[in-house]
Each structure stands twice: as structure tokens, then as C-alpha cells.
Image (cartoon, rainbow, N blue to C red; front, side):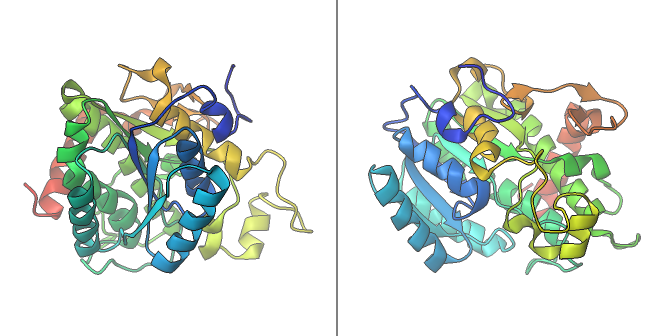
Length: 314
């Protein structure tokens, strides 16, 4: 089967067996995270959905287990805006599993008003990047133990808004713009995949950055109805623009990155629509592909070292 823009996550895993493999999907109780978890479980993986709202996660895990008909899907609490929560989640997960084969860093906040995490980081960078970075580092021993693990880091066309502004990541000296902050965080997510690939591919861990496509989900909760309509995402009657994907289609590239045999040995790629993309030095009008600064190995190294320092992991 040829995969593309309208491929669904379940179509991606047709004929794929993930029995005996363990997977974590952050933000797996809604939107594309839910459909990512569903597809991985349908292929036989033992899936844990890691979410901030534990009650909601438990209800979702129960529904998924019933609908997929596989072994119970686990729900665990994880608040990516809290380094203590990340550490607690990782410790609990490691106590229950000696291997992790798939880590999908899916959860995100988008275009929220300025605030900081409990650890004092700008919310979008602190949650979308540093939360997932700390999660990866905490789970590294069991990713290594899998002897063939994949990490999927969700980016976005939002990365076109901003590179990582290393001299003012926290908007301490520049005016806060929610979309610039989101763009910076999503660039960081893409660079994290490069950083993982550079450091751990030789140990059997491959990483991919993914743009899922335009999908209307709870990610837009910080936007007003007027701003969503103004961007052309919905019309005056609230109908979603036909170019948008369904959540099932939006999850396909994440699942493809996590499972496709065709990608083995080709980590470090930025993917969209179940395909590799073109790298640009200037943003194209249609915002397809990826900016070079978001896949630059030198920028990835700089971000990696900075992230270690910010989290006192150096």
C-alpha cells in the first residue's frame, strides 16, 4: 500500500506485528494521541497512555482495551510541565518494564498565554520540549535495553515561526508572542530527534520528527472561535476546512515513524504525510517541508547541551 496525506493510522499498521513490544504515547487520551495509541495496540503492542488527567486517561484506556480487543492498555499520570511528575512517571514505568520499544512524544500545549511551568520555564518550551527531553533521558536505560527502539517527536508547521532563540528562550528580554513561543518549542522538538539520532543510533535507538498535518483537536483550546475562523481553519458555520485531516489521518505519520520497516536505519528524518520532506532555507508559501534550522546537527547539539544544563543533568 502507498501511504500519503489521507492514510489513516490503522492502515499504516495493517500487516505489522508489534506483539511483545512496549509503547508509551504521551497525551494519548485525545486527538491524534488517542488514535496513535489505538493503532499501536491494534498491532499488538502493550501501550501506556501517559496523561495529566489520570481519571480521563483511565477511562480512555478502558475504552481502547474494549474496542481494540487486545491486552489491557495502561494509563499512567504524567504532567510534562512538572519535572517531578516526569521523574515519578519514569521511575514507576521502569519498575514495571525492563524494555521500551516505542516512545511517542505527542502531548503539547499550543499558543497559550504567557505562563511558566512549576520549575520556572516558559510553558510551551518547558512542556513541549523540556518535559519530553527529561522523559527520554529518564527512560533511556530501558530504551537501550530494547535493542531496537524508536522515538517519535512531534513537531509542526509552527516551527516555521521561529528557530530556537538561544539568547532568550524564556522571553525575558523580548515581548512574548504565543505563536513564536509555540514555533520555538516545535523547532526544539524537531532538533531533539536529531540529537537522539546522533547520540544513540549506534545503541539501537532511532528517532524521527513528525509533522502530523492540520487537525482540529483540543490543541486549539487556547484560541478563540474568531481567530480560528480568521485563519481559515473553519468557515462561518463552524465547518472544518476540507484540507484538514481527521484525527485518524493525523496519527498516521507518527505510527509510520514508530513502526515502518522501511525507515529502519534512516533515523533523524523529518516526516510528514508518511514520507520524508524537503529541507528549505527559506519558508515556502505553502509551509510544506522543514526549515534547515530545525534539522541542523549543530543546532541540535547546542540545544541538547543547553537542555541538559537547564535540567541540571549535565
